[in-house]
Length: 352
Image 1 (spheres, rainbow, N blue to C red):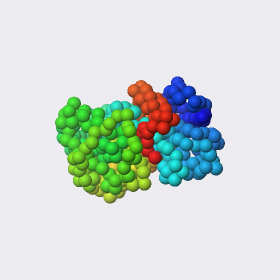
Image 2: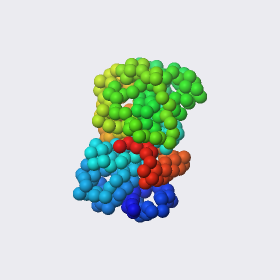
Image 3: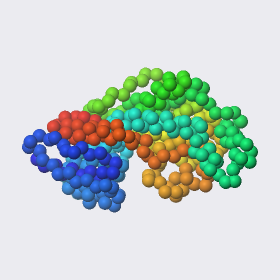
Image 4: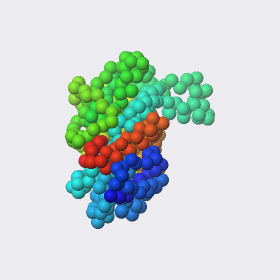
């Protein structure tokens, strides 16, 4: 038996040096630094195994006439939203992912985004760089750190942390480090955990993650979390049930002191709505590592870079919260173990 393995995004995929398959199984690995949407179908035409991270594997690509030999789609990430899972299920293709590989890095990134949003770091950085200097003219920039009602910012001991998607629903972007540091090292922040208002489908019973995630039985209803929390961390997959999970109605419910941290996927937060919520003082800040359309280039791709967003407390990072030496090691090892298990007819990290 011979496998044609095609890796579409080597720049984001720490591929293992080799796969250890049984003696009767051979393989050829073809990898590309980056793959544009127009090139996907041609590159995977002869593949039996596709390794993908963010490149879109849609229903057209998954049609037997386009990928006649395909048997496995191995996602080298936790989120599987680039892959049309329904089309894979219909065709009987196996889809796997790499859960928990980026747990520490994403959690710590969420923590850094929280502090940046709460202390308005990006906004204040821009004001310090201005010439002529408002700081020199008025003697202080303190008003820019205050809420709309004139009160100064909260510190960790006064925060209520809400985590949306904590546990199995949140997948491997579970912000355990955020919870631990804000509640212990950070000064006793209170916590509330919840599922999204519409529960996504449960994971496959065949899933066997490399790292077990904590089970929680103390979830708080979504609407209560919105009302109570001053820090809201999103850690859940993107799917039809979670698109625009936070939009105008939700922002109207939230505390005007609240900061929102998105370490999950773009599209879960309505970007135009969050800009308007910030401008209206309905929430205090937004920090995100993800965007509805990626990569982004100017306001044509996201309202977060438009004129309406100027001067608002918005912190942006380019979907790199996952990147760390530990994540790279984990991804390579989990992918290797998962693909080798599939070749040996064993189930590991199965999504479909």
